[in-house]
Amino acid sequence: MAKWAGCLIRREARVDSTNAQARVWAREGAPHGAVIIAGEQTAGRGRRGRGWSSGPGMGLWLTVIVRPEAEAAEYPKLTFAAALAVADACRVAASVDAEIKWPNDVLLDGRKIAGILLEKEGAAGVIGIGINVRQREKDFPPELRGSAASLEMLTGKPVSMAALERALLEEIERRINAPWDFMPEYAARCATIGRAVRVAEAEREYIGFAEGLDALGALLVRDEEGIVRRVLAGDVSIRGYRRV
Ligand code: BTN
Image 1 (cartoon, helix red, strand yellow):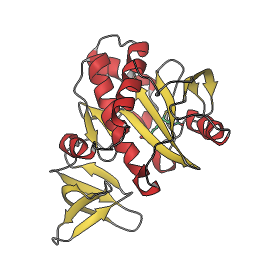
Image 2 (cartoon, rainbow, N blue to C red; image 1 turned 180 degrees about the vertical axis):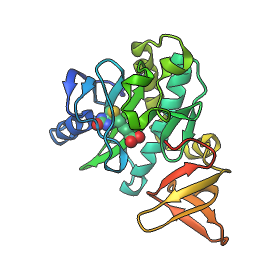
Image 3 (cartoon, helix red, strand yellow; image 1 turned 90 degrees about the vertical axis):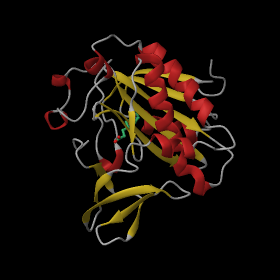
C-alpha cells in the first residue's frame, strides 16, 4: 500500500485536464503525493502541445503532485521514474511486458498504451499519466488508429482499473524516493537505446543511432556523420516501429 502517493485523492467524473486542475491545486498548497483522477477529460493534454484522447471510463487519467527534495535541474528526471512506474504497473495489473520509448511513451506490441506529461508548478512537479485501458480501435481518433492501443484491446482480457491505479501509485512511490537512483534501470529498459532512430527537431530531421543518455536523461544520438547530438525535446521514433 502506497503511503505518500495518493495520501489525498480527488476523484472527479469529468474535468478539462487533470494536469490543469492539479496545477491549480498545487498553487493552493496540495501536499506531496496528492492525486487527482478523472473518469473523463474534455481537454486532455499531451506532450508537445498535442491533445490526449480521454473518453469516459476508457482509461486511467490521473495526475500526481510531488514536492521532492531535489534540485530544480533534476526535476525532468521525474518523467523517467514515471515511465518505469507505468510499465511496472501494467505488468502487475495486466501481466504485460511493456516497453519504454524515450522519453516516456509506454508501448505494447509497438503501439502506444500510455503517455506522461510532466509539468512544473512553482516548486511542485505535476506528473500527468494517461493509460489506455478499455478502448477498442474505433474509440481512438482516426489519426491514432494503428499507432495507439489499449491494454484490453491487446491482451483480450479485462483489466481492473482499481488494481492498475493501486499498482501505479505504489510504483510511483517506490521510484520517487531519495536517492533518485532509477536512471540506470531506466536506461536498461528504454527500448530506444541501442536502436536506429529518426529525430525530428524544429529545424531539422535526421536519422542516427541512439547510444545512451547523459546525466540529465537527454538522448545521445550519433548521426550519419558520426556527430553525437544531444536530444532534449525532439520527436524520436524508433526506425521500423510505427510512429507513435
Ligand atoms: C503524451 O503526449 O504522451 C502525454 C499524455 C499525457 C496524458 C495524461 S492523461 C492525465 C493527465 N492529464 C492531462 O491532461 N494529460 C495527462
